Image (tube, rainbow, N blue to C red; front, side, top):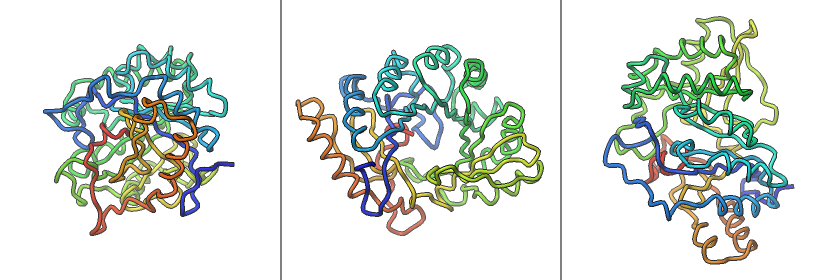
Length: 329
């Protein structure tokens, strides 16, 4: 039984680990277009520090890990970290979120190291639109990475698409058709305000309900139950059996009430919510020789004060100072 239970009764079993703040794309909802200052290498947690932190958290109830960034594939030696984490007794699942641009070369060693699941961020299948959204001409590399993931046995593969009304609403159907053709689980994610100044507006949010109505133009669709009820997505499938869709309504239908995750940034700051305005310094304890008990106590105190929700759309909502790439997606 987990010892990480917050004041609202939510059991925390999932840890998201950012391994780098660096990225090879410049998606507008995630990272500034220019003047990006990366973390100095000495400030980024080492593989040994990450492994130790995970070993401390397992007795508290953490059993699922997801590696994020930035773009995690940019972290040199990533398969070595995966192997270390998979070997930790009590960890039952290690996944990763990636833009897949470098995955064609790394899918095999990551799979051999024990990585079990992949989420690929892909907001369009149109090359010109991809270049506009990401500010890089890398769609071919991303699609090659997606193919390599399938070739080396990753299953299921999930594709995450953030939909903005005036940018890529037209991509809902092509992406859904890709999911039906390739047997991919497609997850549409509502556009969130995450540290990008005044760029976000509620008018650009495309709700779950609207996307569902578009998907029904392809064919009949039906709900699919969530095995344990703690996942962020409301799941659907086409009734002909081809293609599963997940809708993540972070803005219009938030899942905060059953959130079971915490996250640690690449520079070792513990966050209890993507939209936290407070961070807890794990790195200083790791590097000062603090015992495991002190690290565990810090995490327990942080979880006890985990936020009830993100407050998007409310007058008292405060956007995090860090961008998504700096926090870890």
